[in-house]
Amino acid sequence: MAKTIAVALLTNAEGAHVGAYLQALAATEACQNVVLGDPDGRWEDDARRVLGGKLTRVYREHHQLLNEESLGMALVTLEAGLAPPVIQLALDANCHVFAEKPACVRTQDFARLTRQADSKHRHLMLALANRSNSEIIAAQRLIRSGEIGTIYGLEMHLVADQTRLTRPAYHRRWFAHKDRAGGGHLIWLGIHWLDLAMFLTETAVTSACGFTANVGGQPIDIEDSAAAALQFANGTLGTMTSGYYLDKGYHTHIKIWGSAGWLRIQTVTEPRLQWVSTTGDQAGQIQNWKASQRQSGYTPFVKAAIEACAQDTAPPISNSDSLRALQTVFGIYESARTGRTVRIG
Image 1 (cartoon, helix red, strand yellow):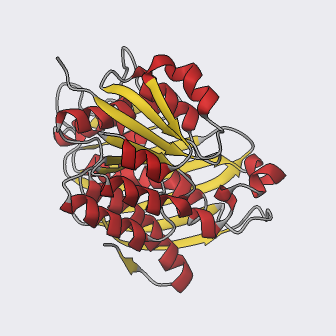
Image 2 (cartoon, rainbow, N blue to C red):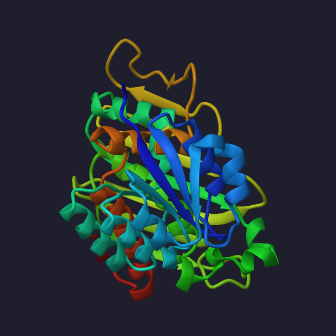
C-alpha cells in the first residue's frame, strides 16, 4: 500500500491560491488528512466543502497546530513578509515544507531556512508549479536527449495584465507593497520563468544585469516592469522581460537555441511546444508537440511534493533550486538599484 501523510495547510485571510491548494489536497491520494491553520476563520467553510472528511481539525494558531499534530508536510501560503517565522516553526516541528512564493522579503531569510531544512534533511519546496506542466517536461526531455544540441542562448517573457493594478482593492493587498511582498511582477510572476530557464537547461544563473520600473504609473510601490540580461554557469546568455502590460490575459514565451536546433514554449496558446532539429529524419522541419492529456496548474505539482514527502523520494523542486530562484530575483533587484552587474549565489 502506498504511504500517506497528514498535511497542514497554514494560511490566513490574505493567503494566495488557497482555493487551488484545497483542490490539490483533495485530489492527492498520498495526503491522508488535512489539518487547517486558519487564524481569521476565512477558509474553514471552503476547506470543509472541498475536503469533506479529509479535513480533520481546524486551529486558530499555527504554533498550537504544529505542537499538537503529527505531520508529514506543512503547506504554507502567507503574505511574503509573514511566511519565514511560520516556515521555521514547521521545520522546528520536523515537517517538510511546501511554501507559496516568494515566502520572504529578503534572500537572507530564505537562505537561513534552507540551511535549517538541509540540516534536518527536510524538503523546503517553493511553489514554482510550472515545472509540472506537460510541455515543460517534454521540452526538458528534448534538451536532455540532445535534440537541439549544446545550449547557446535563450530569451523569455512573461507578461500579464496592467488592469489589476488600476483597482483600489489591489492597492490595499500585500502584493502591491514592496515591504510586504519583496517586489512586484518579477518576484510574483517572473520568478516562474527564471526558474524554468534553469530547470530546462539544468544550469544556474550566475550573473544578472537588470532594470525595474513602474511604467504604468499606478499608485503602488512595486515594479510593474522588469528586464534582465542573464549569464548561466555553462556560459549561456539569456534575456528576460517581466511585466504587467496587457488589458487582460497573458503573453508567455521561452525560446532556447542550441548547436543543433531550437525550441519554443508558449504556455497559454497552441502549439505549446515547437522545435527544430538539424539532425534526424525531420531535420530542418518545425515539429509540434501534442499531449494526449495535458497537465498543468497546482495540483500535479502539489501532488508530486506530497508524494516525495510520503515516500522519501526526490521532490519536484529541491531546496537549493528554490533558493536559487529567489537569489536570482533579488540579484536582479540589486542590479537595478545599484546600476551594476550582480553575481548570483
